[in-house]
Length: 276
Image 1 (tube, rainbow, N blue to C red):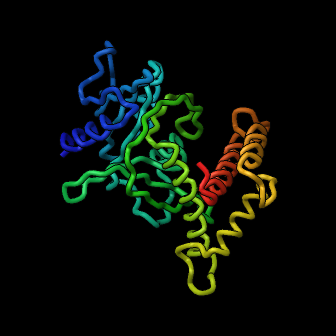
Image 2 (cartoon, rainbow, N blue to C red):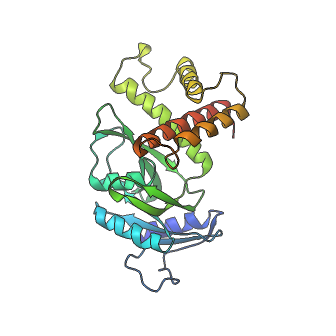
């Protein structure tokens, strides 16, 4: 089954316009490797990505060793986790150490793979903060398709703290959709677990609720409700220069939170109006 999954992944990655070649063969350009990737992906821009299939709960030290070895050579790392060892959707969980490590490498989600009735798929398993400080609510996006491959250098916090080259396989359009979905999921969580809404509308937003969300995000960006696309973009950039973790005087966890909220506000407004 593993060979079948690797062949399926290889075929999908080779269809991506960014990709020059995806192969299950070891990287011939490196003389010595401690960790052999399940898939080696090279892009037309000269980036290289190593993809690892994780079949059982990993050790944090092994995750960090792989990141360290690959980043030393400027190679991006991407982990795909067996969905069977991850929490089910719409459950409240306390993070294990390895889930925390993999989650912070991305942006509060983990890439996973699943094989159902012989059909393979890639899934994003998201972890949303709950009303309890130590618990996260899990939700999944099950229709992820690889449309983009890039490698970016990131300063990562948490129990895999360091500067690593991390693989990214989500397109800009998908990221916008994901940010919008986060807003809906956060709303769904608050209505299902913390309050009772009239009419039982706990699984989605009414037009009035979307308008309220939109107004709150306009206020966050400090713009009027009739602001133009350019005015909103300018407001976003101005505030981003103040709260971005790389430049903000705020403690890094607070800066990360503020910047994430700002980004969600900007993406929600763009999606609401259908701006690209």
